[in-house]
Length: 288
Image (cartoon, rainbow, N blue to C red; front, side):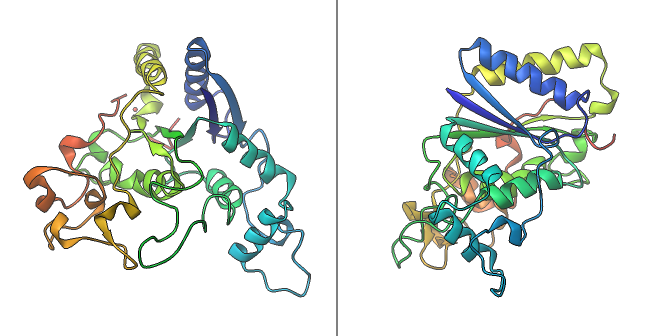
């Protein structure tokens, strides 16, 4: 496989960078080709602004989606954006690796998404009708490709448990897994999450590395998260509300968007704890 790692950490000697190197080493040992977009090393421009859209006339009001679509269709996006789009098209699997900062990804990685996911490239594609609402959430440009997250965090695993103060880790990562990766068609694998990384010793790092190598060995075969396809019949169109017969009307939360079976369908209030991918307990801060 061709594997793209989009890496977002400002410190070359960080634990995150060491884990990135572990992942690269194992992927290459498995015969995969690897490219890395190290966003801090690349001095990646995070903010979307007029400079991103060379075809926009000075007197025109900037409407980001429209300007993005116009420039993408004309092949006129900036060279840095086009280079990253080419990497995404090249890749069979994409890994986003980042420390969990303030319950989300660092701004530089969000800026990579904002600029690279152009209209017509990653969104705004496909028929919109009363039968099909765009090619997204299980359809789209990246169908057949795989994606996953490698995340480091300073908090304890218990803090991110179903009853933990920070909220369940799968709920926190849902906007990224479902909204950024599954939206344009990726098969999304369960995330690899390392906890309490600032208290990690050599023995702990060796344990994490062993588990990460195993995840890299199974990158091409692991079962994806069972998200529901938007146009697969589970949602009413165009409201995009889950059909009432698929879950209790009182059931709420992100877990509704996972395919379930049996009585659990009517009892979901969030990501089901017993279905959550087990994350590695490893020590508090900004996450390695």
